Amino acid sequence: MKILFISDGMSLTNTGIANVSKRNYNLIKSAIGDLNVDLVVIGNKYPEKFKGAIKTYNSPSNKIYSMINCMNLYYPVLNGFIVSDIKNLIRRNCYDIIYIDNSMYGKLAKKIKKEFISIKVIIFYHDIKYRLAKQDLKNSGFLYYPKYIATIYNERLSSIYADKIITINERDAAQLNEIYNKQSDLNLPVTMEDRFNEKIANKHTHKELPVALFVGVGDYFPNVNAMNWFISKVLPQLDLNLIVIGKNMEKHKDKFEGISSKVKVEGTVGDIDSYYYNCDFVIAPLFEGAGMKVKVAEAFMFGKTVFGTKEAFEGYDIEKYSGSGFLCNSAIDYIKGIKDYIENNKAHNYNDEARKLYLENFMDKLYIQKLVELL
Image 1 (cartoon, rainbow, N blue to C red):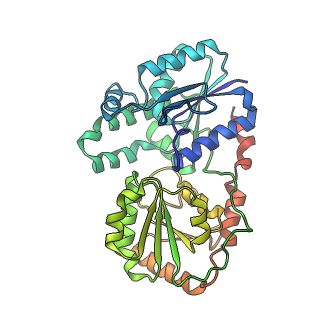
Image 2: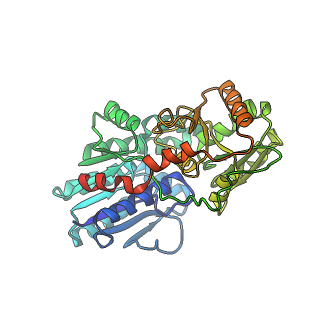
Image 3: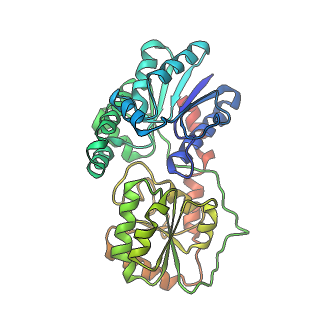
């Protein structure tokens, strides 16, 4: 079996999509062997070719080219030239499967299936963008409209031309069926290689004040809205310090730190792990979004208690692992929940139940056989 793996997430860094894309690539290599998987990277953001890829296509040099791509009903980093080049690559090789690691490339899937009827196309849905795209349009205004149309168009084509569809959780599978009348063939949740090191885990800390941690990309409006809300509505009632990290989150440093002296925005950091080890708990006050929140799984991996909304815990069974996370859908929920936790966990920032939730549900090796069966 020979697979062509096409991804735009592989060249990203410090984002949930990047983590899941790299996980998907590694899982497929584990399932059928490294030599049987060729990698094509779209939207590369670096001048050099992506390591390990047989083809690398760079991101458009400016927003005008991205806009033109969208107006041609391609997602911003794809265009007709790239599609033609990928089709030439397929002609020169005997691929059994084309794995497209993003539902935003439905037009690519259509062109592949029209010419290569016998080749199986598998598409991974990181989320269902139909509703989220409408939120993006509302938040971003008229200039977002071409991308909005391209998003809806490509997601629909993906549902039509995929031979097999992989979703990330049951909610997305249900939305896929509701919106596009298609069944998901496999739910493949967020998983990750275990990075927890018990020897350096700071299980007993002696801080003047507890430390809460938020991890999220600063270019993603649900994360920004979440921090605005939490810092304004919840933090004034709590006696703690809040650390905010995540790619490009430093863009909001002045605003967030200006609201409260309890906030410290570190933004883009090289060593995420140290922040998990040193915090007392993690917050995820997201009221908008789609898919699964990678940073929630990451927090559980480090044995951290998570205070999150219904949206944040989508795909995570915190009821089965009692005490791993606390559902908070209002400011009152957060204030009471965090105060109670601090009172009862003054010298202990490690949660065995949270760690167990990760070990039993979100390790990579748990899903290799399921992927083999799908292929």
